[in-house]
Each structure stands twice: as structure tokens, then as C-alpha cells.
Amino acid sequence: MVRIRALLWLLGIGAIAFIANGSPRLWEIGALREPSSRATTSLETVLLRKKHADILVLLKEQADLSQAKNFSNQHERGRFVYDNLTQTAERSQRELRTYLDAKGVKYRAHYLVNMIAIPQADLGLLRALAQREDVARIELNPQIRNRLFQSERDTPSQTEILWNLKTINADQVWALGITGKGVVVGGADTGIDWQHAALLKRYRGFDGERADHNYNWHDAVDGTPEPIDPDGHGTITLGVVVGDDGERMRTGVAYEAQWMGCRNMEQGGFGTPERYIGCMEFFLAPYPIGGNPLKDGDPSKAPSVINNSWGCPPEEGCSPETLKEAVERVRAAGILFVAAAGNDGPNCRSMDTPPAIYSAAFTVGATNRNDEIARFSSRGPLSFFGEERIGPEVSAPGVGVRGPLPGNRYISASGTSLAAPHVAGVAALIFQAAPHLKGRVEIVEDLLRQTSLDRPGTDCGGDRPDNTYGWGRIDALAAVKAAIDRP
Image (cartoon, rainbow, N blue to C red; front, side, top):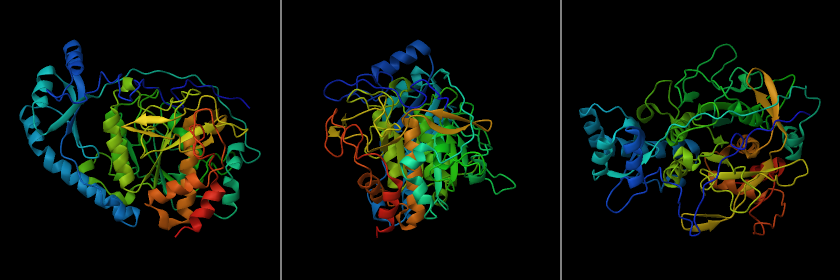
């Protein structure tokens, strides 16, 4: 088999350096609040040098979502969270928006994180905003240049069930008639080749004759009205969740689940904090093409699980606090947020980039054909936000995993980006087998942990879970059986 060797950033996520006490030191381009100002000196320095920059203005008022966990299903949780977040944003942003409108400043309002994105702000506007009492902090939202990746295509026809699917016992779950049918999965990445034979029939926006991309697709990069993937990374990662062309190749763990998608990275794999948040916002409450997220969102159309095979390193301007709020609110809405652990192993404490560092994200490390942890797979422990935790949560196949590539092609690839979709796929199998668990994220996360095959990894500490494999390598059959028996 020909195997792709992509650059590490493509199939994982970069590193952030932290000083011994866990506080960030590389966030010079962020704006952690200082006693005398809501914008750091370094942010002002950037604007003095560049004259203009894209910024995020985060407001003080926050919605109270503490009661979300008391709702019994995903629809109720999602509606509660969406209503509270949008009402808080509309109320608290009113005066700031009026001020910006009066000055003729263009902006984009968001609710998942209560913030306003302003493109090409100047130093004068920055200083004026920093003096406002309704503003909590101001951060950069930088545009990053492209980096290209190298790959070798892998096109042979499939003659048997792929090794990675057999390893996690997905085929044994299919034998029970459980294939993900009736479950919707979200994929946030570089985009999706929606007409690929392995993905077309499973696209929620396609009825077999015509396509309707409303509520099913959002492009946070260019605003394209239908799914595209100039890069290929989003296509292969989603293909590991749902891919099946019906003839030549089955690559998906839950090959009869439906998918919806959001593009949060440009070609080359680069995003911005606003794009990452924008896709999470779309998944929490999908809206039509060109719609207003604060007014047109429909939580009943949300996916039950989102695959996130991306990371936001410091050069993309990701403040740990801001994305943390977004991920926590997606989870509060009853959506399972699966994230790749990153490809910065084998050192301990190498799992250090958002969103993998968040307790609200279900992070996944990568294993090989021998059920051993991949050398590149990032490890814990995690020391963030004043606490030390085990990481990753679980592990899954991530070395030489086959999936679709735009243009009806296939490749084999390696990285935690390929491991995470296995877990998203297993979650879809769980939700078909036990639909009463949709929205009950806490229970599903626990099932995935407890039913994983223990693979002790002592290099970075921990018993079970440990900081190498987490709770172990994922087992679809054990997870589904446990879910069926869970009240």
C-alpha cells in the first residue's frame, strides 16, 4: 500500500510553549486583560506596525447555562443554550453595535462567544474600545499565509474490510444492523468534496436528485454557497466517519450516518479564531446560506457529534480562554465535541494546543496496526487553567488509514486527525443503537472511556487512564453494547 506522509500540521496540531507554572508565554498576539487596559501593549504594538488588523472584541456579560444539563434530550438542551446565548448577545452588544454603526465601522456579531469581530481596525478604534466598560478584552484575529502539504495518492480497490475498521470491531457492530443510520455528524475542517462517491449519498443536503445546502453547509472562510474542499483534509477526515461509495471502498465507521459540514480552514490548513468559533456556532444552531446566526439558527438541525481534526496554535492567535468558552457551550448544548490530540509526540506534555487541551473536548490519540501508540501522537499530562489532568481521553487507529480525496480518489494517511474520526463514528453508532442518549454527552463520553481496550502506557504517567493511550483504544462493539444497556 502506498502511504501518504503529510506535514505534521496537516494531520494534527501545532505546539504552544508554556512556562513551568502553566501560564501562557506565547500569546503576545492575544489580549489577556491587564489591570489598566483591556488591550495589551503587544496588541497596540502590532497595530502601530501594521496600521490595521482584524480584532475580536469580547464583551463582559455572559449567559448562564448552568441549567442546560438538566434537560433530557439534545433538542431541549440545544434550544435552551441557543436562546440564552443569543438573547445575551443581542442585549449586551446593542450599545457597542450602535457605536460602531455611527462610526461606519464594519463588523460581524457572534453569540457562541459574546463577541464582535472587526476587520481592519486601527489603533484609534482599538484604544477607544479598550476604554469601554462593556468590553472584557480584545484579541487579534490574524490572517495566516498558506502552507502546502505533500502527499502520495493511494487508489487500489478494497478487497476486504479495512484493518482500522476491523481493529475497533466496527464490522461486528454492522453485523447487528447498526451502521449510523438516522444520526447526523458534523465535520469542521478545510471543507468537503460533497460530490465524492463515498460522501454524496450520505450528505444531508442531498435527497438523491437535488441538493439543498441550507442548514447543511457553512463556509466561514469564503462564504461559498455549496461545499468545497480545495485542500483535501476535510474530505478524508469526514470519510473516516461516514465514507462508503457502495462499490469500491468503505472507509467510514458509521457509513450510513448523515453528515453536514463547515469550512473553518483555508487551503493549507490555516484558520483563525473567528472561523473556528463561526463553525461551532453553525453546528450548535444551523442556519440557511447567508442567514443571520443570531436570528435564523435552528438547534433542531444540529448534529449529535462534531469531528474536529484541527488545532489552533499561537501563531493563529488562539487565546486559550476564548475557544474554551466556545467548546464548553457546544457541549452544554448536548453535542459531543471530538478533537484530535495533536502530532507533537512522543514527549510528555506535548498535548498543548486548543481545542485538545479543554476538558469539554473529547480528545483522541493515534495507534498503529499493532495497537501501539503512534510515535507522533501527543501525550499528557495537561496543566492548564489551574488544574492537571490526564490526556488524551482515548486512542484510535491513526497510522496508514485510508479515506477519500477530492476528485473521487483515495489516500492513506497518518495522524491523530485520522484517529479522531473513528471516535466520532463510534459515537454515531451509539446514537443509532441508543437514541435516548442523544444530547446526554456526559454519559456517552463515559461509555467511550469505560469500554475502551486498556493499553497501558507508563512513559508519561498514569495508571488507567494514562497520559499515552488515555483510557485505551476505542472498541465500537463494547461501546454499543454498553449503550444499549444504559438507561
